[in-house]
Image (cartoon, rainbow, N blue to C red; front, side, top):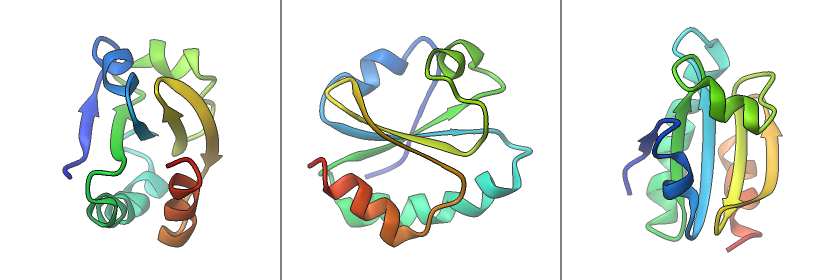
Length: 104
């Protein structure tokens, strides 16, 4: 499944159903660039069981503020629209996969 880009207007609708891992990121963030290919791999491995969603915090400050994002990358896992888990900073593929799978 492809990674889904969202903004303040589409965020709530996108995370409303199923399991979604949201990557709060910015283009100037080094660790965000490092985690991007890892998220691509995780997305491919999940094969539709969960979605990876990206939200640019520079362009969508309201949503980032709503979820208390102070450092990036922040990855928040949602299940049916509810926040169920959160990690901050670069995470290896194995940890991200385990984080998602415990909520499937």
